[in-house]
Length: 159
Image (cartoon, rainbow, N blue to C red; front, side, top):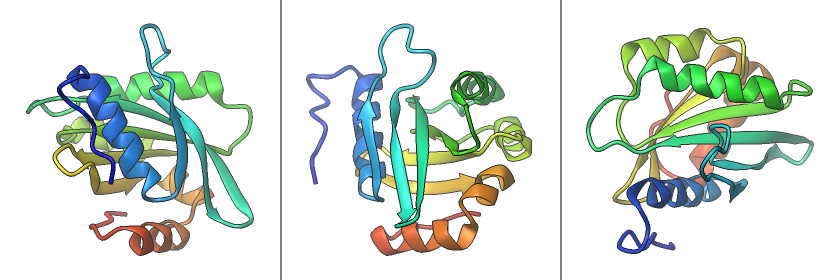
């Protein structure tokens, strides 16, 4: 597995790369697009959980050493997604190196926009948890999502 050269990259950019690697291991075809004034989107691309399903994916990455990710980050991602949605096939993901606050999780779970909250272990560049809201599961059903994630990497999927 490719390791992110943390010595050469700022911690935010290193975490974006680790998230790219972690989601790539699950079959997401993403590319880095984050930079100053990026509209809140750091990674974008496609995910094809089955041969007949393909979704556009937009990922916002938040690297923190210890503080939980707050509801403001969820709202920021929702705003960025609203400006990108032409149809219902866009999935949004908020990736964090720490946990999400109760309010952030509650806001994401009640959003009408397909969202997933992802914790990425920055030591191993692997997904530690993947929590999808009902709108996400409506377009990418839990069975398809769970099978896809379970077969590609071992970790707990919280749906």
